[in-house]
Structure formats: structure tokens, C-alpha cells
Image 1: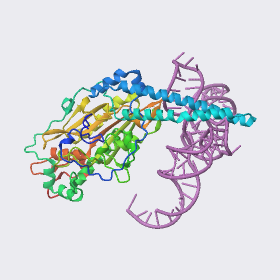
Image 2 (image 1 turned 135 degrees about the vertical axis):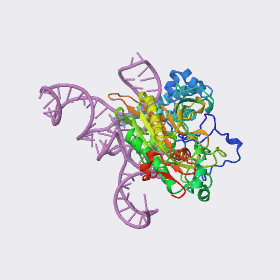
Image 3 (image 1 turned 120 degrees about the vertical axis):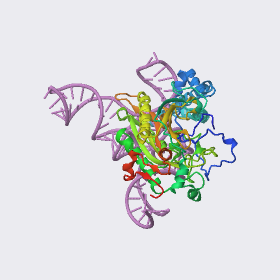
Image 4 (image 1 turned 90 degrees about the vertical axis):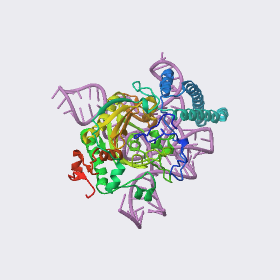
Length: 468
RNA sequence: GGAGAGGUGGCGGAGUGGUCGAACGCGUCGGUCUCGAAAACCGAAGUACCGGCAACGGUACCGUGGGUUCGAAUCCCACCCUCUCCGCCA
């Protein structure tokens, strides 16, 4: 589970796997009636031709992820599959030709019996060859589906989050005397209720009330307005329930089903809007000049957080349900690196405007999510915890998801199609942002000042305090 | 939920079981014409995989999966989806 270091992952659908799941007692996911999902004929996540052309590079990438070399076994399988395919196709070609002649012979009144016999003999052998081809193909797909994306060249090597590299630090944590944590503040204000949430839904849910509920809404509104007006993202209101195919497309399935909630009739609750937004371009061929495509959405996110029992149990840091504003970009391959920086900057802008201190780190190879080839995490300063905590994760997935969901584009005047690049990032997590505002803007009397940029969204309110 | 209709290429829309990867129209692209454009005319053009240095050849795909057949877009079965009407509903 921790194999690829799926992290707490504010952006990947996967929940945290930093925590060794086996140690904790019965972290039973609250899901019932899990519906079995059938492997959707996946597009290969990895380019077999690229592996054929340069197996060493592929294995080198795996090694940086801490994985054993796989190219020899993959190529061997691939070779056998192609041989079977060729044999199968040749048989079909002969059958087609014979069938054509049979029609011809019958029309001309000639004896078609020898041809009929030949086809009959062919059909004896055909199914076995087809079976062989399918079996090898499925085997190959299964292997490829379980291999994470290869890290980009400029991603630092490392084992876990301690090896992440800080790239910048913005803002200075204010000296808050005797800082309180968000849940202390919220409960004292009477606007954040965990007991009420427990009564309704159990652990890892929160009820917000009054001005705090409104602050949450204001934060999300502010983010959406900023991204749409200033960064050219199109606002989307997507489904929150998706099918297997969509979950495969962004690589939540097949490996991370445990982290997702599923309805009794087989829908998956989205763990992030990345899933519906990115899959919007699934199975399509885009024009080069409509790229980059930039999409944003504020949605609830649902995570079963299996395996993270005992972690961040107090407060609303880690919830089964939270709001997040998501950014998704679909780009040409040559655009994705620049787009990654741009997206990260857009997310950082939110924190800058809110006056929240943060730092941005490049995740090392050991801490990156399954689908990412490079990831920046943005960590916001939480005075109550005296720590930087993840509030956004911006990943360039290269063509990994695109190949999977068959999202291609065609360059102008070009005949061939190629896979687009997909990027996603939180811009940013609304729940955690609320926490950050509360802790950074807390006053000695327990009231919370409203950041300037949010005042218009709060009808000019200056502060949230005990008596309104 | 009940009743009916239908799912074919970017779109619309044909398609007696055999040369249909698919008529025709629109749209798109290239060209002719033009000072330029429009119109007109000529031509090109699906996706993916396999083999090949290439030219090119082959295979699959007409919602999905099975079946019948020497041969299936065309016949049979199951499923999915869409549309219309009725009911219910934010």
C-alpha cells in the first residue's frame, strides 16, 4: 500500500498511505456492499513502444520509484502477444479471402467444397490463437496498470517526505501568542460542531454553523472567482458520482479502490474533482489550438481514508468529506511543464491574497502519487499546530492518464494523433484553507478577523466572534 | 416506475447476409478560378493495432458483449445508453 508512497494526497484521489495500515486495529472502511468492478479495457498507461525503444530508461525510472526492473518481462510478454496477434490476423485474412471466393464460386456455379473444407479446418485452430492473444494482452495490461508513472528528470530522488525539496517560502508566520488550534477556536465560537457531526455521521465529519459555514463558502467563492477571472479557468459543475471507467481514467482504479466510497449500485463518489474534470476529455481527439484547456470546479470530495486511522483525528484536517477547488489543465506535451508552474502559481496566489504564509516543496520520487511525474505540494502555516501542512498538491501527469483514457489531440495539418498531457492541482483545499484562516487570523479573545479579500464575500464582516 | 422509438464516420442520413470501412448531403482540408473573396468545379479525408526502412500490405471497429453462418452493419440473445409520452419528484 505504501509502495509508491501515496501520500496524504490532497490532490490525488488516493487517501493516505503514509501510515502503515497493518499496525492499526481494524481500520474498517465505512463502505458497505462493495460492488465488484470489472476491469475496464484499459488503454495502456505506459507506452509500449517507448519501452521497446528504450527499456533502460524505463527501468531507470522504476528504480527511482524504488521498483525492480520490469522491462525484460514486459518486453517478453509483448513479443509473445504480438506474435500471437500476427498469427491470429493471418488466419483471419485467409478465412476472409476464402469466404470471399466461396461467394464468388457459388455465384459462378463452381464447386466451393474445397474452400469450405479449408475454412472449416481454419476455424478449428482460430479460437485457440485468439484466446492466446487475449490472454497475453490481458496479462500485459494488468502489469502495466499497476506500474506508477515515471518521475520527471528534475524530480529529486528520495524515500519519503523528508527528502522533499523546498523551492520557496512565502510570508512570515506571525507571532501568535498562545496559538489555539482551529477546533478549539471553532468549538469555543460555537460554530464548529464535532459532536453534532458524530451524531449524524460518525467520526471524521464536521458541522459548520453560521458565519463559519459562510466563511467556508466565501473561501470557495473567492478561489473560483480568482481562477476564472485571472487565470482563465472555466468553471464546471460536474457529477460527483462516476462510473468505473472514469475512476480508471485518472488511475484511482484499479489500485486504490479501498480509498473510495462506492454506492450500492456501483457508482464511485469522487475523491477529487480531478476525476470528472480530467475525464471530460476522455476518448476524444482535440484540436491543438483548443489547448491548453483549463477547468476548475468546487466540489465535495469523499475519501474513505482507509488505513489512516489514528491520524489527525481531532478537528477537520482529515475528513471523509470536504470541499476542494480543483484545477485541471489539458495541454500539448510541450506545454505541460510551463503549465505546471502556472497552475502552482495560481494556487499560491490564493494563499498570498489571503495573507497565509506557506512554502512550496517538490516531492521526491518516494513521496509522489501514482499518476504523477512531478508534483509540487503547497504547505500552509498553521500556528496552532506550529507546522506547515499540505493544502494543495499540483501534479503534472504527463501522458499517463491521457493514454489511459484515450485523450488525444491532433496538431494542425498533422495526420497522426498523440496523447495530451494532463495536470491537476488543488487551488486549494477549502476545508484546510478555512482552518488556516482561523488559525492565522485568530485573536487573543478567540475571535477571528476576516482577511481583506474575503470581506466582500462576507458582506463586509470584519470578524467572527462569539456574539456575532 | 409504465408504454413506445432508436443507437451507423465531425454532424445529418442510407444500407436485399457476400467487392460495405460503409451511398448521399453538410461541414473540414488541398487545388483550379479570382486582385481578393464568395460561388462553381476537381480532389483528399475515420480510429487503433500488427508487419515493413519505406512504398505499402493486413486485422479489428457500424452502442457493448455473446451467438448463428463459409461469410454479419445487416439474422438471434443479453446488456447499456438516448429520445418521446405518462406517472413521480428538487
